Image (cartoon, rainbow, N blue to C red; front, side, top):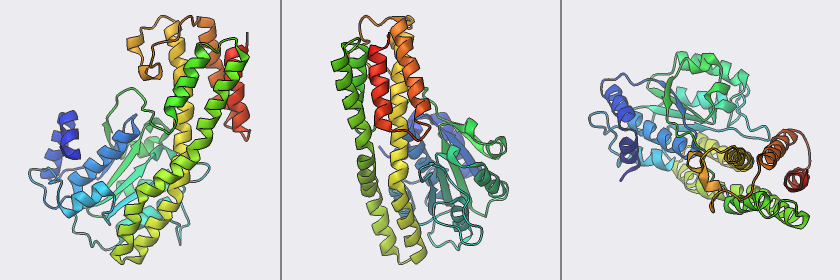
Length: 351
């Protein structure tokens, strides 16, 4: 089953309305794609791009096999432009007005005014983690959202639309694809989950076990960067090679700049997922200690053997406080390893 068909089966009403709009020429020029799963945001943005750009579409549905559809899915279609947050602040900046740098909003917008050479029905721009557009970038984007270049589609994908300015949200058609749960797929997630369960179980009141679980948590955190950089390089290899074969110097430069920045951006995203998993575990432990049924949890997979036995409401509240303190502390320039060790030992040993 193709990616498009799998999502049409999962969201039949949404895709039917989008196909009708595409067939009648009334497809919106800007969508705000809200999903709490990064995978769904990535894949549905691809589906929407195929629907808008496929030159062989029938009854509003993309064919899924033409050069444009295959290029969009592989991210090698020359008129598919993506923008993601970069840098230590993990944000999307506006860029220089006269000579905008790659991976900035102005450089992204500039691509839509170039002559079309791809054969697709539309140029497509996707801004991933659009909630990381800073205020200056959002204000600059308003004109494009109001008066887009001809035959373009803009997709703002985010899990947190409330972080966007009301003026940005109001200029996009909302597509909510919510499952009300997080998906944790970062490297080392199984080790982290096992360590958290140990902290809430056998390590309670045992300093040696608490220190051992702290070491596991720190090891997982330390490995996130190398894993993100290696995985991102592999993901971008095909796109970099395809750009090199295109003979389009500007396209090559844009893809190479995006690939160079993607590694650090991927690390910042995985670090956020890592910290979210810790806080979600503590939050759900508190819910369980407050007699919320196990089957009502959004992420029961964080307790692969079921909830730890003997957890009191007082202990669960303490672990949640320590998780809150960890997230607050890491907002500042502190030693991450020390902060993680303080969380683990404080959870297990504080009275």
